[in-house]
Image (tube, rainbow, N blue to C red; front, top):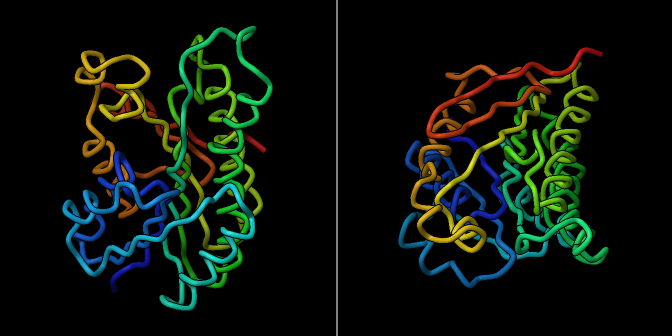
Length: 242
């Protein structure tokens, strides 16, 4: 049976690559993006009625509740939630980072994933099975110099997944974390330049592995995480011991 997939940050980069792969499999994707800016290009990549784009600021709890309630009304369920949305500011040393910027990184990268989990879990738990995939980063497993805010927030995503997994260990809901290394995306180009970005793995490669995880072809235990770096899997880690 076709699945209902919810993907945040779905109008470009990894989120769009994921949307295309799931739609190509016959699933229905509800893609959430902060603005409609990239929608025309996204709809050319995935020209299907099974790719439904929704706009909303998912750092707002009211907006998240409204978006998920609307998806529930339209689709009746959520089989897979992928929290992919995030952002990264220019490189800066710790002493040069303002508190406002530090908090903004947590808002965009961690608060959004928390709110989506918080309000999707009650829907998913009513079903026999469900999956939440939280996208962290290599920076969420070992901090990157001059990316303190991003690194700290992405470490938090890993902790969020572990907590969700432990709290739902008696249900059919599984939660894992995907930690990609550098990808050839607009964010990478803005941070490190086009030459560096061109050397990185493609979002399509990472998306393909994530779809394989969702389809049970690459096993990752609930609460565990997988590192995808240099166009290969470099580690699959079980959840920490209780």
